[in-house]
Length: 499
Image (cartoon, rainbow, N blue to C red; front, side, top):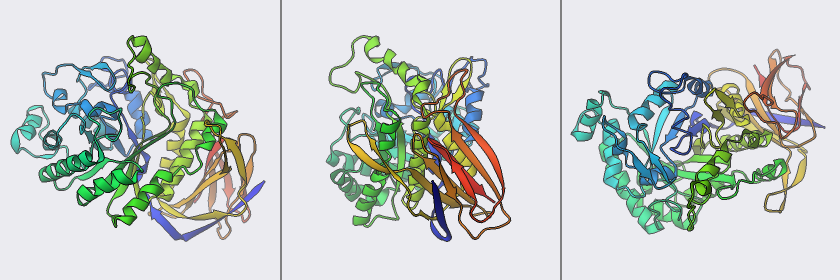
């Protein structure tokens, strides 16, 4: 079936921030320890960081990395993780010992090694507004006060200049250490924002929020004038207790109204006349939630086999198929289309657990989702332009909840570059079996056409140690001709570049 697309490059919908392709890392399972930070490993550098993982992060040009949580941060005291003498503590979020050998200084080193902006999420659970502002002192003041002097004593004479800070993580949730009511939250954020800004007026602040009218109105009434961002999280395939991944069709059902949170928060900001002042930081998102049974529950697991060992199931690479890749492309398309209000998004996490990179003692595996970031970061433009297509077919899919939904088969996005000519079109084909031909827009000439295809033999293809089924294939289609058709296979993500 042929799908003709029309593109109006003069109708610019917005310029997306590179931070839409951001990432997140937390002190959970093997993300930090035994993951990116593994001193003594044969592949570790002089600072203890895995060089193979660093190289993979650089290839997808990680623009911003959120840390240290996540649920972990709501009982994390940053002062335990700096200085020469560090004492292990018990992490009540994940019920493991935290050695505190990876802290603020190590995190900043990591960000500098991969060339990204740091984004620190503070403890607004058991912590205080003063503790949060002390952290900003340590990172951003030159030498005033004991915390900036402490950083200097620790061998870091220059301020870190951390621009992005988040007050809290999911503090609306009963599962969180130090969960708050809407009233409590508004007051705490107001005080924390006030104190952090008195340390460094140049920072940008976010606060934990969700698509909820009561929570957000209370927050924004108290401190809307002190915020630059609202922190929104979303996972679709929920598996905290039971590790039962949705199949391909069920994952495609999740693409129905994939940007509902952005639209709902947009409505609240608009009603409160804050649209344009405050943006959304979608700073935790992934198709599949993390598996951590019997921890965020009233009845706790007693034996480690009940709550700790099951976390290894997150690292079953067969879970991360073309379903994850196609969903990820659809989400990124939606965030690009909402680039006027979504200025940051952080895939959760970047490494291990549900991450786009998997590591073991021998090396790394690039999961299907990694290649989606590779496509978008390295081949899509930064300016979103108008695209429409007539008669895009729809299909009925049944979700994990048993409900039937109707979704468009193709999800498409058109971009140009602000610094050079050209056009890039992303096409995610959700259909499990059918191929389509995209007929390129008319009015071009003399330009080279290249297509980058991400696919596997089946919708359940995946990458693992010694197994590479999902890869990007590049094909030169020659010089653009009017009516040129570009085939897109089933269960695939494609980027067509004309330049």
